[in-house]
Image (cartoon, rainbow, N blue to C red; front, side, top):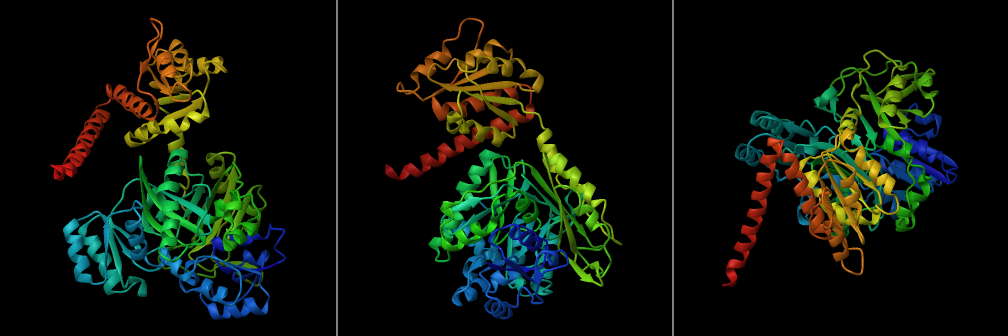
Length: 590
């Protein structure tokens, strides 16, 4: 088939690179493309926002599939116009693209369908926005409502900064029509993550987690940019949070968009702020992120063309994703002065040397070809992307490739992926052992508590009967791995807690699991009846037991941690406040 990719940045180079691997792709065009894309596709001198010209080109060249990279043509209604002309196109409709093109629209949808997000309001008049800023105080975030190339979000640590941001957006119109409205909201704290998924408006098929780096300088300092690098997977999103994100964010948004009469089809991107067990949406984007697309598409092992066709045809439920287990890291190399004023037309050297490295791809973003030389032609110039067996090895390889490339004024962040390394080096304090992986659903109650208190854990499976040596080895080595408490969840005969307790001096808490015809009573009795000298703390059966086991573990740790003690006091107060709310709700039934 003939494929047309729209756009000319790093994301589009990654898309062209991936589509070129498809057995379905006979001829690839890219409008307008760049110097790197030109090696894989025929570049067409049509801008991404020139929808009429793109439509005429697609008709004249018998394009079978059009793939939209950037947000501007989506917001301009390119999908609607192509579909009206009978052409197949991958991307969100104009109505659905409002999830990105209008932050006030996205905020209203999230509030209506209970999707967790920051508290905030939308304003069309400067005076009202100014009064709101003075009312709620700093820190807060001021956002231009429309599209602003990733630069219309200003984090303000003081009230003065917020008022200046309002003036820039609403009075001086630094972002043009994007500043007709502003959203002012609370400033969220935590660690950011990106979560992308294919969706046909019904099925949501998630890609691996990733993390972007927006600020221009190391340690998240300086102005926001379109993105200075990304990596995948992001360890801040473990399996517990992955499931929460799907159930609390992605699926509700897709269902909500359908209910609003604007079903979402394409790639849905959620920018998230994660603080322990709390997930809040910073923004939604209506397409692949850039630079997240680069590491994600390097890890995606599927032929991407059938996936895109399944999205268009509404049969994504027949598809599964195959993901390379290795990590991927993208380092963005930028022009001197970016994200402010910068020069173009500077010759780049060393790209071929970097591309010759195994498992490295240099994706072009702002480049042009002139007299057989590759020159800079934008702020973000290259996205050097590498695969590695671990995040650490992928980081190492990416920066080795970066070192081979140079041009006058080039700059890039030196800390892409560092947050992942810090998180992965944190030693767990609690070990959770299950008799079977089928017990995970029950033990998730414990995971939520540990997330809430910020306590790192590790999980494994070991059976007292089927793998007694594994259980014994886990217990005897627990202290040297830094564990302070162990929780054992098992059903039926449930001797797992006792086996662990027999091989350690650490406190062990047993969770009886309801997995037998005796509804967990057998597990309860087997867990509580330990011989003298083998103490096991025993909690209630099932999910409530798992939650109580976690709280008990926190209380054990808090005996030597005043900070945890204070958090437990606050936790107890929260529970008491919830009871008071329920009591108040019943007072009308006298």
